[in-house]
Image (tube, rainbow, N blue to C red):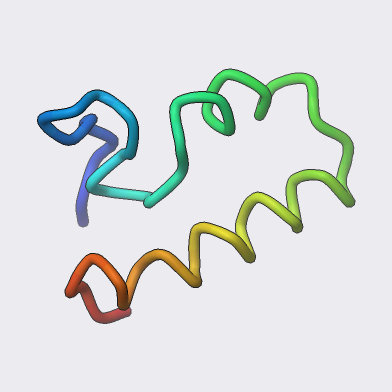
Length: 52
């Protein structure tokens, strides 16, 4: 299992593929906002060369 760790630019987690802003917003996000964050992160995964 991967763990959250920011990329070299400090902008994207290499484990969950959320942005720093999304990680910061997560504790305050409602269910709909969290689903949107997860959906965006899922779209970033293949772009980063990772498979589920």
